[in-house]
View (cartoon, rainbow, N blue to C red):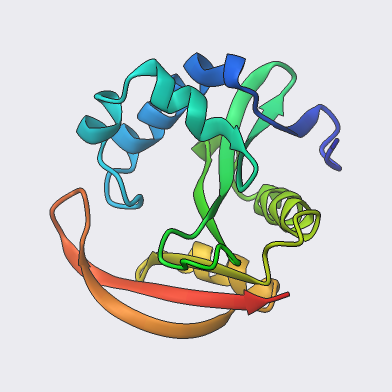
Length: 171
C-alpha cells in the first residue's frame, strides 16, 4: 500500500525481516521506554527464533512502514491472549520515527491493521490500550470508533505508575 505521501509504503513483514524488526523495535523501546508493554532489556534477550515467529502467523502480523527501503515505523495485530476463544484481535507495537510524525501516518497503520483483521473472520472484536498520558494514541483510536471499556493502574517498563486505558471495537 502506497500512502498519499508518495514514497511511503506499508507492507506485512516476513520472517526474513526479523533483524530489521529487531533493530527497529529495540530502538523504539530504548527511545520511548514508558510507552510499550515490554522493556528494552526483556526484548533484547529474545533469541532470533522468537523474533522470526512473532512476525507472522495465522492470528498475528507485524507491518513495516517504509520510506523507500528505510523502515520508519512498525505496527502489529496479535490474537489477544486474554481471550481464550481467539476472537479478539489486539493492536500493538505502533511506533513511527519522530521525524515522520504529524503526517497522518497513524491512519495508515490503523487502516492496514483493520483491513488485515477484517480479512481474518475469526476476529469479532478488537482491543487497544495506551498509557493515560498518551493523548495522541487516544485521538487515533477514537477516530476509528473505539469505545473506552476500562482503566487500570500499571507499572510501565520505565518504572513509573500510570493508568493504562483500554478500548474496544466490535466488528
